[in-house]
Figure (cartoon, rainbow, N blue to C red):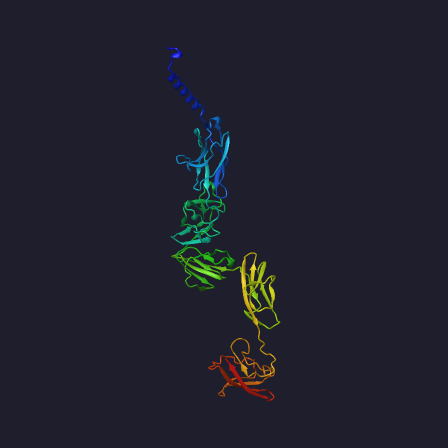
Length: 489
């Protein structure tokens, strides 16, 4: 053996490097324990999607300063072959054991046997998978409708009835069909509290009597995403079934929400009626209206039929106003205007020529100005709705003013000034005075013993700028007044 001082120096250096390498390998390994879950099942949604897990690792000193922990989610069968990363820590942020971290589920999550595992990056290590757990991301989790919310259906003997999830949904019906990734389970009731699974899919063809409903398939997380119940009956050939009619806005309904949609059971053809009278072109399964009344429908089911009716009632309150659309008042007069109604907690707004009349908030006003008025009655409780009344006030003309003389010129041009032949009161209505008016040819064009100061009552078809007429006024005591009337056009 050669003395130590005789060893090859390069060989010594190589040995030292190899020894250091193996020592580094020993101290850079880390072991991560199986993660424990802070939940039993994960039923995620837009409102909640935070879940925690706790894991241990050792030794703490083995973690490199750039280490990151990640959480991987398996597929629905617990397989990590195509695992999805649902959490990544910041570099060097987790240095002590045990560690608890939160993660969220992807929107595509749906199954009963998911698992998670934890991985580190420096050094590289992977835990074993957690225990299995049910996990679903509930894209839609509210009640929805089937069969247009009609509670019944019928089929002829030997036939079937198709139940479908309504799509698209409305503001009050968030249809799960708006989310293509969802699946559905149909059930048949066996008692008031029990049911049996019958089929999967967005529709169900029924050929047996019973009550059916459908749920969005969220497995053990299923809760609020379910439909209304529909009772299906069998009708003998040439028989007639009851056709239930549903109103989309309910009954009574609030017309302020727009048209309500009447819908009935599915069939081959339809005919709708109102108060017993056939409604033209109302031949589909749905019919829209904003009226009240008795609506009925005849449904052809093939070899049998169905019929039904609904007494549809609008919740719009009743109201009235005590003035005409056009009203006249004289200078210094006023017009009392009152609206009556049975609205719940009503509010009143009065307008003159489009401007709000400040301070007028009761159901009546004393109108003194000329112009276009409007009153808005609003029901503020229950069915929130409004009714508007419009009316106009114009300056009135006294038909029987106390004039001293019989005029001989009038101008019937519609300006309300000297439009008619107005004579003294001792010759007008109630005095039995005879008033006769003749044209230039001596033909009587007007005659009365009850003159209303209203001549000419008709268009005279005047052909010249000025036209001459003659009058004869004879009182009951034989006094006679004669003269001419010039019509100025």
